[in-house]
Image (tube, rainbow, N blue to C red; front, side, top):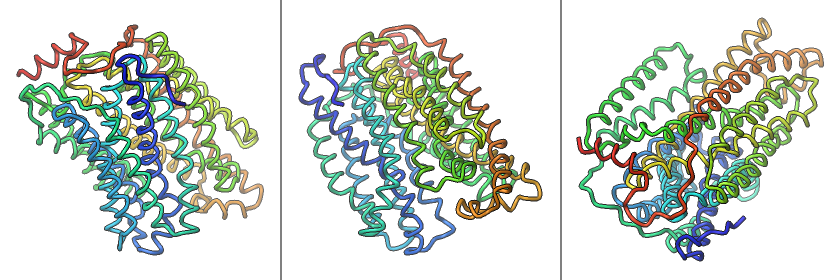
Amino acid sequence: MNPRLGAANGRPARLRLLFVAQIVITLLTALDQTIVATALPTIVADLGGERQTAWVFTAYTLAMTVAMPVFGRLGDLRGRRALYLACVAGFVLASVLCGFAAGFFSLIALRFAQGIGGGGIVVLGQAVVADAVPARDRGRFLAPIGAVFAVASVVAPLLGGALTDTVGWRWIFWVNAPLGGLALLLAFRSVPRIVPERTGERFDTVGAVLLAVWATGVVLVAAWGGSTYPWSSPVILSTAGLVLVAFGLFVHRCRRHPHPIIPISIFRNRTVVISSVLAFVVGTGVFGLVGYVPGVMQAAFGLSATPAGTLILPLVLGLMVTSLLAGHRMARTGRYRDFPLLGCTIAAAGMLGLAAVRTSTPVLLVAVWIGVVGLGVGCFMQISTVAVQDAVTDRVVGTATSTVALVREVGVSIGAAALGGLLSARLLSGLGDRRYLAGLSPVQLRTLSPALRHAYAETYLAALTPLLLGLVLLFVVALAVSLFLPDRRLSGGARTTGQGRNEAVGHQVASHEGG
Protein backbone atom coordinates (compact mmCIF):
# COMPACT_ATOMS: atom_id res chain seq x y z
CA MET A 1 0.00 0.00 0.00
CA ASN A 2 3.03 2.28 0.25
CA PRO A 3 2.82 4.76 -2.63
CA ARG A 4 5.83 5.74 -4.66
CA LEU A 5 6.20 9.33 -3.59
CA GLY A 6 8.88 11.85 -2.97
CA ALA A 7 10.47 12.53 -6.31
CA ALA A 8 9.02 16.03 -6.34
CA ASN A 9 10.94 17.29 -3.36
CA GLY A 10 13.82 14.82 -3.10
CA ARG A 11 12.87 13.49 0.34
CA PRO A 12 11.28 10.08 -0.29
CA ALA A 13 12.33 8.69 3.10
CA ARG A 14 10.52 11.43 5.03
CA LEU A 15 7.43 11.08 2.87
CA ARG A 16 7.37 7.33 3.46
CA LEU A 17 7.64 8.02 7.18
CA LEU A 18 4.81 10.57 6.93
CA PHE A 19 2.71 7.98 5.11
CA VAL A 20 3.22 5.45 7.92
CA ALA A 21 2.48 8.15 10.52
CA GLN A 22 -0.79 9.03 8.80
CA ILE A 23 -1.76 5.33 8.63
CA VAL A 24 -1.15 4.86 12.37
CA ILE A 25 -2.87 8.10 13.38
CA THR A 26 -5.87 7.36 11.15
CA LEU A 27 -6.13 3.89 12.68
CA LEU A 28 -6.01 5.46 16.14
CA THR A 29 -8.80 7.98 15.54
CA ALA A 30 -10.99 5.63 13.47
CA LEU A 31 -10.93 2.93 16.13
CA ASP A 32 -12.03 5.35 18.82
CA GLN A 33 -15.07 6.57 16.91
CA THR A 34 -16.83 3.19 17.00
CA ILE A 35 -14.91 0.94 19.40
CA VAL A 36 -17.18 2.11 22.23
CA ALA A 37 -20.32 0.69 20.56
CA THR A 38 -20.09 -2.91 21.74
CA ALA A 39 -18.69 -1.97 25.14
CA LEU A 40 -21.40 0.56 25.95
CA PRO A 41 -23.82 -1.80 27.77
CA THR A 42 -20.98 -2.89 30.06
CA ILE A 43 -19.89 0.72 30.63
CA VAL A 44 -23.46 1.71 31.53
CA ALA A 45 -23.73 -1.23 33.92
CA ASP A 46 -20.48 -0.15 35.59
CA LEU A 47 -20.88 3.64 35.64
CA GLY A 48 -24.64 4.14 35.31
CA GLY A 49 -26.03 6.88 33.06
CA GLU A 50 -28.63 4.94 31.11
CA ARG A 51 -30.40 8.13 30.00
CA GLN A 52 -27.16 9.73 28.74
CA THR A 53 -25.91 6.77 26.69
CA ALA A 54 -26.13 8.55 23.34
CA TRP A 55 -23.87 11.33 24.60
CA VAL A 56 -20.86 9.01 24.57
CA PHE A 57 -21.07 9.27 20.77
CA THR A 58 -22.67 12.71 20.47
CA ALA A 59 -20.00 14.42 22.61
CA TYR A 60 -17.25 13.05 20.38
CA THR A 61 -19.02 14.03 17.14
CA LEU A 62 -19.93 17.47 18.46
CA ALA A 63 -16.38 18.25 19.56
CA MET A 64 -14.97 17.12 16.20
CA THR A 65 -17.45 19.25 14.27
CA VAL A 66 -16.67 22.37 16.30
CA ALA A 67 -12.90 21.82 16.36
CA MET A 68 -12.24 21.22 12.66
CA PRO A 69 -12.73 24.76 11.29
CA VAL A 70 -10.93 26.26 14.29
CA PHE A 71 -7.81 24.13 13.82
CA GLY A 72 -7.96 24.57 10.07
CA ARG A 73 -7.77 28.35 10.39
CA LEU A 74 -5.22 28.32 13.21
CA GLY A 75 -2.99 26.07 11.13
CA ASP A 76 -3.08 28.57 8.26
CA LEU A 77 -2.18 31.44 10.59
CA ARG A 78 0.30 29.86 13.01
CA GLY A 79 1.65 26.81 11.22
CA ARG A 80 0.43 23.23 11.37
CA ARG A 81 3.25 21.15 12.82
CA ALA A 82 3.02 22.19 16.50
CA LEU A 83 -0.81 22.18 16.44
CA TYR A 84 -0.89 18.75 14.84
CA LEU A 85 1.49 17.23 17.37
CA ALA A 86 -0.49 18.84 20.21
CA CYS A 87 -3.74 17.37 18.87
CA VAL A 88 -2.24 13.89 18.65
CA ALA A 89 -0.84 14.16 22.19
CA GLY A 90 -4.12 15.57 23.53
CA PHE A 91 -6.13 12.83 21.85
CA VAL A 92 -3.95 10.10 23.36
CA LEU A 93 -4.03 11.69 26.82
CA ALA A 94 -7.83 12.05 26.75
CA SER A 95 -8.12 8.43 25.59
CA VAL A 96 -6.05 7.16 28.52
CA LEU A 97 -8.02 9.30 30.98
CA CYS A 98 -11.29 7.87 29.58
CA GLY A 99 -10.10 4.53 30.89
CA PHE A 100 -9.85 6.00 34.39
CA ALA A 101 -13.30 7.67 34.28
CA ALA A 102 -15.05 7.25 37.63
CA GLY A 103 -18.51 8.31 36.43
CA PHE A 104 -20.55 8.58 33.26
CA PHE A 105 -20.46 12.38 33.11
CA SER A 106 -16.66 12.43 33.42
CA LEU A 107 -16.50 9.89 30.60
CA ILE A 108 -18.66 12.14 28.41
CA ALA A 109 -16.45 15.14 29.19
CA LEU A 110 -13.32 13.19 28.31
CA ARG A 111 -14.93 11.94 25.10
CA PHE A 112 -15.54 15.61 24.25
CA ALA A 113 -11.83 16.28 24.82
CA GLN A 114 -11.05 13.30 22.59
CA GLY A 115 -13.23 14.78 19.88
CA ILE A 116 -11.40 18.11 20.00
CA GLY A 117 -8.10 16.34 19.42
CA GLY A 118 -9.69 14.12 16.77
CA GLY A 119 -11.08 17.11 14.86
CA GLY A 120 -7.63 18.70 14.79
CA ILE A 121 -6.04 15.45 13.65
CA VAL A 122 -8.47 15.01 10.76
CA VAL A 123 -8.14 18.53 9.36
CA LEU A 124 -4.49 19.24 10.12
CA GLY A 125 -3.49 15.76 8.94
CA GLN A 126 -4.97 16.41 5.49
CA ALA A 127 -3.41 19.88 5.36
CA VAL A 128 -0.01 18.49 6.42
CA VAL A 129 -0.20 16.10 3.48
CA ALA A 130 -0.95 19.08 1.24
CA ASP A 131 2.22 20.74 2.56
CA ALA A 132 4.41 17.74 1.73
CA VAL A 133 2.89 15.90 -1.23
CA PRO A 134 2.32 17.22 -4.77
CA ALA A 135 -1.35 17.59 -5.61
CA ARG A 136 -1.39 14.99 -8.36
CA ASP A 137 0.23 12.42 -6.02
CA ARG A 138 -2.04 13.28 -3.12
CA GLY A 139 -4.94 11.02 -4.15
CA ARG A 140 -2.60 8.04 -4.29
CA PHE A 141 -1.18 9.02 -0.90
CA LEU A 142 -4.58 9.50 0.77
CA ALA A 143 -6.44 6.53 -0.74
CA PRO A 144 -4.83 3.83 1.47
CA ILE A 145 -5.33 6.09 4.50
CA GLY A 146 -9.03 6.38 3.69
CA ALA A 147 -9.17 2.60 3.30
CA VAL A 148 -7.63 2.17 6.76
CA PHE A 149 -10.31 4.45 8.19
CA ALA A 150 -13.08 2.44 6.53
CA VAL A 151 -11.70 -0.94 7.64
CA ALA A 152 -11.06 0.28 11.20
CA SER A 153 -14.62 1.58 11.46
CA VAL A 154 -15.89 -1.94 10.81
CA VAL A 155 -13.29 -3.79 12.89
CA ALA A 156 -13.50 -1.45 15.90
CA PRO A 157 -16.81 -2.76 17.32
CA LEU A 158 -15.50 -6.32 17.11
CA LEU A 159 -12.26 -5.33 18.85
CA GLY A 160 -14.22 -3.40 21.48
CA GLY A 161 -16.32 -6.45 22.22
CA ALA A 162 -13.27 -8.72 22.48
CA LEU A 163 -11.46 -6.39 24.89
CA THR A 164 -14.58 -5.89 27.00
CA ASP A 165 -15.17 -9.63 27.29
CA THR A 166 -11.55 -10.41 28.22
CA VAL A 167 -9.59 -7.66 30.00
CA GLY A 168 -12.42 -5.15 30.61
CA TRP A 169 -13.95 -2.12 28.90
CA ARG A 170 -11.32 0.32 30.19
CA TRP A 171 -8.76 -1.28 27.88
CA ILE A 172 -10.62 -0.04 24.81
CA PHE A 173 -9.18 3.35 25.80
CA TRP A 174 -5.87 2.26 27.33
CA VAL A 175 -4.91 0.37 24.17
CA ASN A 176 -4.46 3.80 22.58
CA ALA A 177 -1.41 4.56 24.73
CA PRO A 178 1.19 2.45 22.85
CA LEU A 179 -0.44 3.12 19.48
CA GLY A 180 -0.63 6.84 20.24
CA GLY A 181 2.98 6.96 21.43
CA LEU A 182 4.13 5.43 18.15
CA ALA A 183 1.93 7.83 16.18
CA LEU A 184 3.33 10.85 18.02
CA LEU A 185 6.93 9.74 17.43
CA LEU A 186 6.33 9.15 13.72
CA ALA A 187 4.55 12.50 13.35
CA PHE A 188 7.37 14.31 15.17
CA ARG A 189 9.91 12.85 12.74
CA SER A 190 7.93 13.30 9.52
CA VAL A 191 5.63 16.35 9.65
CA PRO A 192 7.29 19.17 7.67
CA ARG A 193 8.25 22.44 9.32
CA ILE A 194 6.60 25.14 7.22
CA VAL A 195 6.31 28.63 8.62
CA PRO A 196 3.31 30.49 7.18
CA GLU A 197 3.75 33.89 5.63
CA ARG A 198 3.23 36.65 8.20
CA THR A 199 0.41 38.90 7.02
CA GLY A 200 -0.77 40.45 10.29
CA GLU A 201 -3.98 38.40 10.26
CA ARG A 202 -5.57 37.50 13.59
CA PHE A 203 -7.80 34.64 14.57
CA ASP A 204 -11.49 35.63 14.57
CA THR A 205 -12.63 34.48 18.02
CA VAL A 206 -16.18 35.84 17.69
CA GLY A 207 -16.57 34.09 14.35
CA ALA A 208 -15.32 30.85 15.89
CA VAL A 209 -17.89 31.13 18.70
CA LEU A 210 -20.72 31.73 16.23
CA LEU A 211 -19.57 28.78 14.14
CA ALA A 212 -19.40 26.61 17.27
CA VAL A 213 -22.95 27.60 18.28
CA TRP A 214 -24.23 26.82 14.78
CA ALA A 215 -22.43 23.46 14.55
CA THR A 216 -23.53 22.52 18.07
CA GLY A 217 -27.14 23.30 17.20
CA VAL A 218 -26.98 21.17 14.05
CA VAL A 219 -25.57 18.19 15.96
CA LEU A 220 -28.10 18.58 18.79
CA VAL A 221 -31.06 18.76 16.41
CA ALA A 222 -29.76 15.64 14.65
CA ALA A 223 -29.15 13.82 17.95
CA TRP A 224 -32.41 14.80 19.70
CA GLY A 225 -34.89 15.00 16.84
CA GLY A 226 -37.27 12.07 16.59
CA SER A 227 -35.67 10.22 19.52
CA THR A 228 -35.23 12.30 22.67
CA TYR A 229 -37.84 14.84 21.54
CA PRO A 230 -40.47 14.82 18.76
CA TRP A 231 -39.50 16.85 15.69
CA SER A 232 -42.37 19.27 16.40
CA SER A 233 -41.45 19.79 20.07
CA PRO A 234 -40.57 23.30 21.35
CA VAL A 235 -37.04 22.12 22.18
CA ILE A 236 -36.30 21.02 18.62
CA LEU A 237 -38.01 24.02 17.03
CA SER A 238 -36.22 26.51 19.29
CA THR A 239 -32.86 24.79 18.71
CA ALA A 240 -33.47 24.85 14.95
CA GLY A 241 -34.28 28.56 15.22
CA LEU A 242 -31.01 29.12 17.10
CA VAL A 243 -29.18 27.27 14.33
CA LEU A 244 -30.63 29.59 11.68
CA VAL A 245 -29.85 32.74 13.69
CA ALA A 246 -26.30 31.61 14.48
CA PHE A 247 -25.67 30.72 10.84
CA GLY A 248 -26.94 34.09 9.66
CA LEU A 249 -24.78 35.95 12.18
CA PHE A 250 -21.77 33.80 11.22
CA VAL A 251 -22.16 34.55 7.50
CA HIS A 252 -22.57 38.27 8.30
CA ARG A 253 -19.41 38.14 10.43
CA CYS A 254 -17.45 36.43 7.66
CA ARG A 255 -18.57 39.04 5.13
CA ARG A 256 -17.68 42.01 7.33
CA HIS A 257 -14.61 40.91 9.26
CA PRO A 258 -11.19 41.57 7.60
CA HIS A 259 -9.83 38.17 8.70
CA PRO A 260 -12.78 35.76 8.97
CA ILE A 261 -12.43 32.17 10.16
CA ILE A 262 -13.85 31.06 6.80
CA PRO A 263 -13.29 33.63 4.03
CA ILE A 264 -16.49 33.84 2.02
CA SER A 265 -14.35 34.58 -1.03
CA ILE A 266 -13.24 30.96 -1.29
CA PHE A 267 -16.80 30.10 -2.30
CA ARG A 268 -16.36 32.18 -5.44
CA ASN A 269 -14.26 29.29 -6.65
CA ARG A 270 -16.32 26.63 -8.44
CA THR A 271 -14.11 23.80 -7.25
CA VAL A 272 -14.63 24.69 -3.59
CA VAL A 273 -18.42 24.89 -3.97
CA ILE A 274 -18.75 21.67 -5.97
CA SER A 275 -16.38 19.75 -3.70
CA SER A 276 -18.40 20.89 -0.69
CA VAL A 277 -21.55 19.55 -2.36
CA LEU A 278 -19.80 16.22 -2.98
CA ALA A 279 -18.63 16.09 0.63
CA PHE A 280 -22.19 16.70 1.85
CA VAL A 281 -23.48 13.92 -0.42
CA VAL A 282 -20.85 11.49 0.93
CA GLY A 283 -21.77 12.39 4.51
CA THR A 284 -25.52 12.22 3.99
CA GLY A 285 -25.77 9.29 1.61
CA VAL A 286 -23.00 6.92 2.61
CA PHE A 287 -22.47 7.40 6.31
CA GLY A 288 -26.20 7.72 6.84
CA LEU A 289 -26.63 4.41 5.02
CA VAL A 290 -23.89 2.70 7.05
CA GLY A 291 -25.71 3.38 10.28
CA TYR A 292 -28.90 1.62 9.11
CA VAL A 293 -27.70 -1.33 7.01
CA PRO A 294 -27.24 -3.69 10.00
CA GLY A 295 -30.69 -2.75 11.33
CA VAL A 296 -32.29 -3.31 7.95
CA MET A 297 -30.72 -6.75 7.62
CA GLN A 298 -31.90 -7.74 11.10
CA ALA A 299 -35.43 -6.37 10.72
CA ALA A 300 -36.12 -7.37 7.12
CA PHE A 301 -34.07 -10.55 6.74
CA GLY A 302 -33.98 -11.89 10.28
CA LEU A 303 -30.17 -11.96 10.50
CA SER A 304 -28.40 -11.87 13.84
CA ALA A 305 -26.15 -8.93 14.76
CA THR A 306 -22.81 -10.32 13.59
CA PRO A 307 -23.73 -11.38 10.03
CA ALA A 308 -25.84 -8.22 9.67
CA GLY A 309 -22.80 -6.12 10.58
CA THR A 310 -20.63 -7.87 8.01
CA LEU A 311 -22.85 -6.44 5.25
CA ILE A 312 -20.84 -3.24 5.66
CA LEU A 313 -17.71 -5.02 4.41
CA PRO A 314 -18.70 -4.86 0.68
CA LEU A 315 -19.06 -1.09 1.06
CA VAL A 316 -15.58 -0.88 2.60
CA LEU A 317 -14.04 -3.10 -0.07
CA GLY A 318 -15.66 -1.05 -2.82
CA LEU A 319 -14.31 2.16 -1.29
CA MET A 320 -10.81 0.68 -1.06
CA VAL A 321 -10.69 -0.57 -4.64
CA THR A 322 -11.84 2.57 -6.42
CA SER A 323 -10.03 4.96 -4.05
CA LEU A 324 -6.74 3.25 -4.87
CA LEU A 325 -7.45 3.08 -8.60
CA ALA A 326 -8.57 6.73 -8.76
CA GLY A 327 -5.51 7.84 -6.80
CA HIS A 328 -3.10 6.04 -9.14
CA ARG A 329 -4.89 7.28 -12.23
CA MET A 330 -4.90 10.85 -10.96
CA ALA A 331 -1.17 10.63 -10.20
CA ARG A 332 -0.46 9.65 -13.82
CA THR A 333 -2.70 12.18 -15.56
CA GLY A 334 -3.21 14.96 -13.03
CA ARG A 335 -6.89 15.10 -13.97
CA TYR A 336 -9.80 14.39 -11.64
CA ARG A 337 -12.99 15.73 -13.23
CA ASP A 338 -14.21 12.38 -14.60
CA PHE A 339 -14.07 10.58 -11.24
CA PRO A 340 -17.00 12.37 -9.54
CA LEU A 341 -19.07 11.93 -12.71
CA LEU A 342 -18.36 8.20 -12.84
CA GLY A 343 -18.65 7.76 -9.07
CA CYS A 344 -22.00 9.49 -8.69
CA THR A 345 -23.41 7.41 -11.56
CA ILE A 346 -22.24 4.12 -10.03
CA ALA A 347 -23.38 5.10 -6.52
CA ALA A 348 -26.83 6.11 -7.81
CA ALA A 349 -27.12 2.71 -9.54
CA GLY A 350 -26.18 0.95 -6.30
CA MET A 351 -28.76 2.90 -4.31
CA LEU A 352 -31.38 2.16 -6.96
CA GLY A 353 -30.61 -1.54 -6.59
CA LEU A 354 -31.00 -1.31 -2.81
CA ALA A 355 -34.33 0.49 -3.25
CA ALA A 356 -35.61 -2.52 -5.22
CA VAL A 357 -34.73 -5.00 -2.45
CA ARG A 358 -37.59 -7.11 -1.07
CA THR A 359 -37.74 -9.99 1.38
CA SER A 360 -37.38 -12.42 -1.53
CA THR A 361 -34.09 -10.79 -2.61
CA PRO A 362 -31.03 -12.98 -1.91
CA VAL A 363 -28.80 -11.54 0.79
CA LEU A 364 -25.84 -11.94 -1.56
CA LEU A 365 -27.48 -9.56 -4.04
CA VAL A 366 -28.01 -7.01 -1.25
CA ALA A 367 -24.28 -7.26 -0.48
CA VAL A 368 -23.51 -6.69 -4.17
CA TRP A 369 -25.60 -3.52 -4.32
CA ILE A 370 -23.95 -2.22 -1.13
CA GLY A 371 -20.57 -2.92 -2.72
CA VAL A 372 -21.61 -1.00 -5.85
CA VAL A 373 -22.37 2.05 -3.69
CA GLY A 374 -18.89 1.72 -2.19
CA LEU A 375 -17.30 1.48 -5.64
CA GLY A 376 -19.05 4.67 -6.70
CA VAL A 377 -18.24 6.76 -3.64
CA GLY A 378 -14.63 5.58 -3.60
CA CYS A 379 -14.14 7.24 -6.98
CA PHE A 380 -14.42 10.74 -5.52
CA MET A 381 -14.39 10.61 -1.70
CA GLN A 382 -10.73 11.70 -1.41
CA ILE A 383 -10.61 13.63 -4.67
CA SER A 384 -12.97 16.33 -3.41
CA THR A 385 -10.43 17.26 -0.72
CA VAL A 386 -7.45 17.12 -3.10
CA ALA A 387 -9.21 19.31 -5.67
CA VAL A 388 -10.04 21.97 -3.08
CA GLN A 389 -6.50 22.03 -1.72
CA ASP A 390 -5.14 22.58 -5.21
CA ALA A 391 -7.68 25.27 -6.08
CA VAL A 392 -6.91 27.71 -3.23
CA THR A 393 -3.82 29.57 -2.09
CA ASP A 394 -1.46 28.16 0.51
CA ARG A 395 -2.67 30.83 2.95
CA VAL A 396 -6.13 29.23 3.19
CA VAL A 397 -5.46 25.55 2.40
CA GLY A 398 -6.19 24.50 6.00
CA THR A 399 -9.32 26.62 6.09
CA ALA A 400 -10.58 25.17 2.81
CA THR A 401 -9.81 21.61 3.96
CA SER A 402 -11.65 22.14 7.24
CA THR A 403 -14.62 23.68 5.41
CA VAL A 404 -15.07 20.56 3.26
CA ALA A 405 -14.65 18.35 6.35
CA LEU A 406 -17.20 20.44 8.26
CA VAL A 407 -19.74 20.16 5.44
CA ARG A 408 -19.22 16.38 5.37
CA GLU A 409 -19.77 16.10 9.15
CA VAL A 410 -22.92 18.21 8.91
CA GLY A 411 -24.06 15.86 6.14
CA VAL A 412 -23.43 12.87 8.42
CA SER A 413 -25.53 14.43 11.19
CA ILE A 414 -28.35 15.50 8.89
CA GLY A 415 -28.33 12.22 6.97
CA ALA A 416 -28.47 10.05 10.07
CA ALA A 417 -31.19 12.19 11.65
CA ALA A 418 -33.30 12.48 8.51
CA LEU A 419 -33.10 8.80 7.61
CA GLY A 420 -33.82 7.71 11.17
CA GLY A 421 -36.72 10.09 11.72
CA LEU A 422 -38.39 9.48 8.37
CA LEU A 423 -37.92 5.71 8.56
CA SER A 424 -39.44 5.60 12.03
CA ALA A 425 -42.43 7.74 11.03
CA ARG A 426 -43.13 5.76 7.84
CA LEU A 427 -42.74 2.43 9.63
CA LEU A 428 -45.18 3.34 12.40
CA SER A 429 -47.67 4.63 9.84
CA GLY A 430 -47.38 1.44 7.79
CA LEU A 431 -47.78 -0.86 10.78
CA GLY A 432 -51.05 0.74 11.88
CA ASP A 433 -52.48 -1.20 14.82
CA ARG A 434 -49.34 -3.36 14.91
CA ARG A 435 -47.10 -0.48 15.98
CA TYR A 436 -45.91 -2.48 18.95
CA LEU A 437 -43.75 -4.49 16.52
CA ALA A 438 -41.49 -1.48 16.00
CA GLY A 439 -40.46 -1.64 19.65
CA LEU A 440 -39.33 -5.27 19.54
CA SER A 441 -35.67 -6.23 19.49
CA PRO A 442 -34.26 -8.31 16.61
CA VAL A 443 -34.22 -11.35 18.91
CA GLN A 444 -37.89 -10.84 19.77
CA LEU A 445 -38.81 -10.36 16.12
CA ARG A 446 -37.35 -13.77 15.30
CA THR A 447 -39.81 -15.37 17.77
CA LEU A 448 -42.86 -14.09 15.86
CA SER A 449 -44.89 -16.32 13.60
CA PRO A 450 -43.56 -16.53 10.00
CA ALA A 451 -46.59 -14.66 8.63
CA LEU A 452 -46.29 -11.80 11.11
CA ARG A 453 -42.53 -11.60 10.66
CA HIS A 454 -42.93 -11.47 6.87
CA ALA A 455 -45.57 -8.72 7.13
CA TYR A 456 -43.28 -6.66 9.36
CA ALA A 457 -40.31 -7.14 7.02
CA GLU A 458 -42.33 -6.06 3.97
CA THR A 459 -43.63 -3.00 5.83
CA TYR A 460 -40.09 -2.11 6.91
CA LEU A 461 -38.74 -2.31 3.34
CA ALA A 462 -41.74 -0.40 1.99
CA ALA A 463 -40.98 2.39 4.47
CA LEU A 464 -37.29 2.37 3.50
CA THR A 465 -37.70 2.36 -0.29
CA PRO A 466 -38.69 6.05 -0.77
CA LEU A 467 -35.77 7.11 1.43
CA LEU A 468 -33.31 5.16 -0.72
CA LEU A 469 -34.87 6.67 -3.84
CA GLY A 470 -34.26 10.06 -2.24
CA LEU A 471 -30.57 9.15 -1.91
CA VAL A 472 -30.58 8.14 -5.60
CA LEU A 473 -31.86 11.63 -6.41
CA LEU A 474 -29.15 13.10 -4.17
CA PHE A 475 -26.41 11.36 -6.18
CA VAL A 476 -28.06 12.41 -9.44
CA VAL A 477 -27.97 16.04 -8.27
CA ALA A 478 -24.31 15.60 -7.32
CA LEU A 479 -23.69 14.20 -10.80
CA ALA A 480 -25.29 17.25 -12.39
CA VAL A 481 -23.28 19.60 -10.18
CA SER A 482 -20.05 17.75 -11.00
CA LEU A 483 -20.50 18.58 -14.67
CA PHE A 484 -19.44 22.13 -13.77
CA LEU A 485 -16.08 21.08 -12.31
CA PRO A 486 -13.24 22.75 -14.26
CA ASP A 487 -11.27 20.34 -16.45
CA ARG A 488 -7.80 21.20 -15.23
CA ARG A 489 -4.65 19.39 -14.19
CA LEU A 490 -3.50 19.16 -10.60
CA SER A 491 -0.17 20.81 -9.87
CA GLY A 492 2.89 18.61 -9.67
CA GLY A 493 4.89 20.44 -7.00
CA ALA A 494 4.78 20.26 -3.22
CA ARG A 495 4.07 23.31 -1.09
CA THR A 496 7.26 24.88 0.19
CA THR A 497 6.37 28.51 0.83
CA GLY A 498 3.44 30.67 1.74
CA GLN A 499 2.93 31.71 -1.87
CA GLY A 500 -0.18 30.48 -3.63
CA ARG A 501 -0.51 28.94 -7.05
CA ASN A 502 -4.02 29.94 -7.98
CA GLU A 503 -3.67 33.66 -8.53
CA ALA A 504 -7.37 34.22 -9.26
CA VAL A 505 -8.42 32.86 -5.89
CA GLY A 506 -5.47 34.61 -4.25
CA HIS A 507 -6.63 38.01 -5.49
CA GLN A 508 -10.18 37.27 -4.30
CA VAL A 509 -9.03 36.33 -0.81
CA ALA A 510 -6.61 39.24 -0.62
CA SER A 511 -9.20 41.77 -1.71
CA HIS A 512 -11.74 40.43 0.77
CA GLU A 513 -9.29 40.29 3.66
CA GLY A 514 -8.09 43.77 2.88
CA GLY A 515 -11.56 45.07 3.71
